[in-house]
Image 1 (cartoon, rainbow, N blue to C red):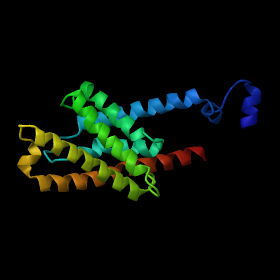
Image 2 (tube, one colour):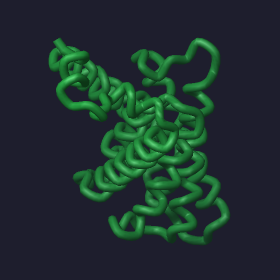
Image 3 (cartoon, one colour):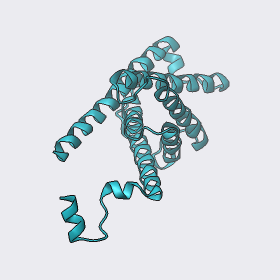
Length: 195
């Protein structure tokens, strides 16, 4: 079929042939980073507020885990985190852009660190859960550090630090599993389409 298509339409390139072009790969990678960053920021913006610390992670961290599983290249997590920081202003995520760049960028860095450790495959549910947990705890540590330097009392301080920590652990695990689950559904659908 491929030979017939090429013979019928000389000069027509298939996707594997396009993928050999470095510039094409770079454009696709940029589009993926922008897409997953925007999806994460949108998820954070539209999540139903439940007043539970860390509950929004499924909506924003899940897409970042999905993006890391899809792209699997060094620096993808940090790029998505920084992208989410840039999208924080148009999506109205609160805080300053600098704060959001540092917050979500550092979360993305931790995604990169965990997913590139030996024997840690982000496409494995265990690794996805560990990545979600670690990334969400990174965000929690960042917020705690910022709150310690701020005279303003944060909501999680009222609820209690340990309670908030436990909720961040639970929701981080859920976000990792959610991101992995969406990746697996997409992978299964792709295999069916290619049959």
